[in-house]
Image (cartoon, rainbow, N blue to C red; front, side, top):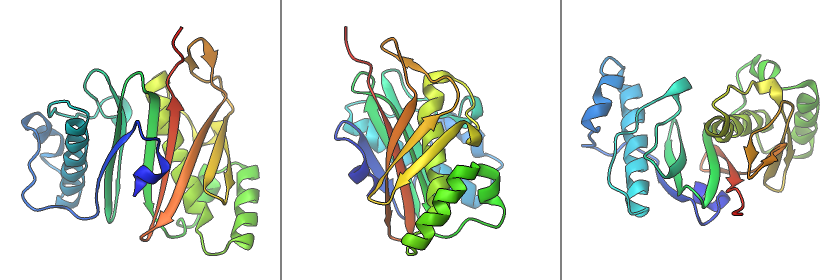
Length: 221
């Protein structure tokens, strides 16, 4: 599903259930050794998706350990992103040099809990979200905005190694299926050029909201 909003250079593997009999890489076991069953299933299945994506890139299976702020530690030469929520686990990977960075997120297609939108959205974003809800009432635009911010952060962090607060990117959503995140802090530099915005796409399907941000690779000199 999510491959439809990503470029062909990005390989996607996804699951809508937790297959029986999956095993973690031995080096991953300690991460979820004391976790509840739901957390362990999510962790295991999304890494199963990631290793299937690695195989499609012609790479061997590898442990994918959480690093700083939980960011996945990919093998050398790989950029990628993982996401999971109820009813969905997915991984999107590409080779370094074909894509600069990628961020994906999946959320249940349901309104955000009370108070969350106010906590994560800028005043202008809340105004635009309210207008979208009136014009297109069939979509949970608050949840989509939250998901878009998650995808932006996942694409941002590997390029910068820095936190990006919800208030540090102003996202404008086009109901046709795209969004733009204008960075309100200095952005990463690729090929000597500072990025001032990230572009993304979204899809609402199967009771899910999925968003994806792709940062192009730095141009070769």
